[in-house]
Image (cartoon, rainbow, N blue to C red; front, side, top):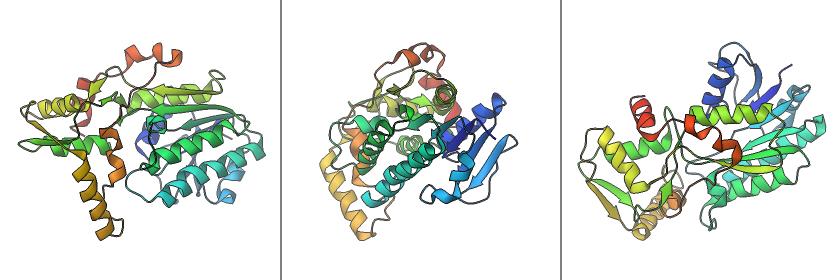
Length: 297
């Protein structure tokens, strides 16, 4: 039996959690869609699906805590976001309650706290999943990471593509602030929270050491790529939203970017400092280190 049950181990944050567990020589039961895995020793792999509790519920026996990372991100329909992020969480919570598991760490998103989620189904799905966790009766912690950077980070890849151009277009004013955090630093926090008894019943926002505007973030990437940092041009959001909406309709929803994903270009994504994070943040990687580490990966 394993102390921890982890979902979403194959994603950006999940891979960092797996590395953190291996470094600490901690075993875990991990849920994977499909039966193939490149995980090394120390992990018990369960092939299953959150939508099908019979595929994973037996593996919860004897588990001390659940770390729920799995989520649908990117461009998807509102129905798919709800099916995976809301209903999948509901099913997992019910199975945990059935097995008498107490500790439940849910990885949400800073976007769950955005002011207007009517046109942002991903953020709305995380908000609604959070409500299920709070009402579950379990000993829970909700974690809202800010922008997570790491090997293969989608947001870093998109900004790096913009930064590779002679002049980089930036949707919106460029003034909204973000607080990038390294996947490894977030993973260390998540494992600590899963293994601890406190804090409990709280929502913790976790961001990195520095707060920067989107424009400064893009300039930093340009500089790291040997481009002129100042060669950034701002574009109005409204026509971009219209163009993306049209592309979604013409491709039956298969266009890789949706209008909803522009939410980060109009709202701050900065974490409110929590005592749990305060003691750790000075050890987090700074932005320059992250860009040096991940732009080469």
